[in-house]
Image 1 (cartoon, rainbow, N blue to C red):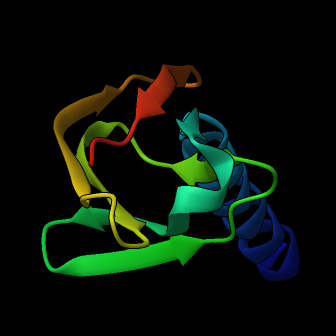
Image 2: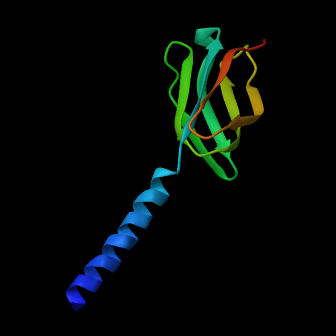
Amino acid sequence: MKKLSVFCVALILSSILFVAFTFVKLGGIVGRVGPVDAVTGVSLIAGRDTTSVTVNQGSFSFTQLKEGVYTIVIKANAPYKDAVIENVAVKDSTTTDLGEVRLKQ
């Protein structure tokens, strides 16, 4: 009887944890940078955390992001100037498309 009680408690706790993690839905940010040869890298800033991704033919993508507000920093080759996009919102399980970001000289 004691083993059955322990098993039931363990089953209930594991069910609660499983359900808790299924409600965490992650989103993303995608975009393109032009001109393609002007960009050296794209970084995402969330609070004190920074992550970078590679740029493939001008396109970039950040995935597995929690709901929140982020800053995107695009590093450029000279004579182009770096670009900063602030207050990029990510909602539950959606991908925010920034469209094409044209770098200025």
